[in-house]
Image (cartoon, rainbow, N blue to C red; front, side):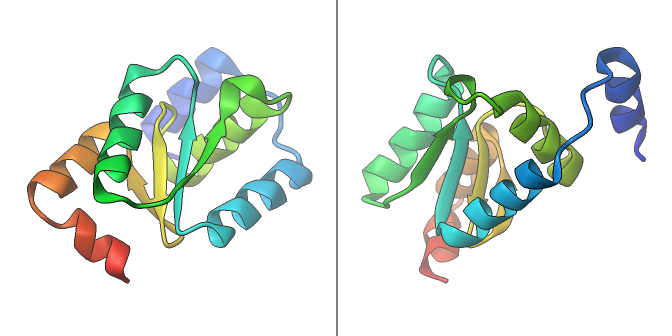
Length: 117
């Protein structure tokens, strides 16, 4: 367990993650070419979605703040990726990161290559 995970778990002490949440998240990641875990009020999420809109790339959005098990999903994503904040982006099942990662990939003309795979 990384120091960040330890501090987060010590400070926050999240509920244990259910097997159902884990299965749901893994299935969602595997089933979508571009998946964005988001929150409806997040400006960084809106910026990330705008990048994909500009590219004409379809994507699936899971708005964690509108789901009953949204916190459990977010906690599982943290355990899986080490990233707690949204947006949390996956392309072809691979964790890419957040908005700054997407913006950087776009700027370096690498995002389109990821999407072609």
